[in-house]
Length: 257
Length: 106
Image (cartoon, rainbow over all chains, first blue to last red):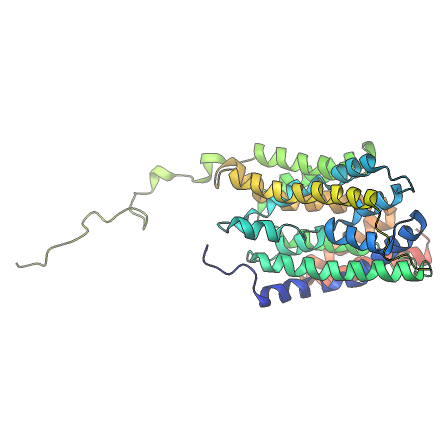
């Protein structure tokens, strides 16, 4: 496992291709952000710098919207923390992808993690190597930055994403990927809890707190529904002679000697 | 008049601040999870985590789109279960939402 490659050209390409269906929506929303940036006084260079270093769509929208000639830096950074708190959970859930890999791979692989390439990675049947995640991230970053630039240069004249339901692409992709993440009935109660928690959060809490409310509810219920030692039922009924137990006679002397 | 190359120190520091906290949470989450046990209750929770986070991302956004958003999410789920094809499921959901907005203005 630890000798497996980290970032191969094949995995980068496969990760990028997996995120291809998100191209139109990412491009358009990148352009909408570009238009917003012209109205708030960011230079194109500053916007692209933000897109490559922060690389988190919803936090960027809120930050650029808050941007003024005198930048409210603290407000923007606090808003970014709140909106991006989910990345703590997203990072935690990526443990299988980075299992037994060196620290530098984690440091390099965890920057370009957006909701989209993360979800695509987690929904793969077999846990991909970090290159798959990174390939999707690089692809999305290029599309996102291209969209920013187009929107900034056109400063308007961008088609309304809502007309073609391009805003709904993210919702649809995430809903569809959830189906692919189903691992069995152990998921049922935590998922229901997450849905209920996020719905309650949506109506009662501001901004993106609903994500944390739902995820928190899911975590709580999955911790409470842990089957524990009961997961290995009738252990004493099975005689301890599986392949795990050492053979009782490691060496039998040849008969008749 | 395209303002490309203006970089004010205030803007750079603000953006770097955003970047540091965001990257810190991404990497910090992974490194924290690495310290959790590989089996038992925490491993069980971590396995459920991606689905719980993902659901919590899209359920509220479907609600934000109103009745047509909920219908679109249901259409996406049904199409995905039926076809196991990501693109088909996405088109089913987006198509329904686009049509709904066009014809009913929902």
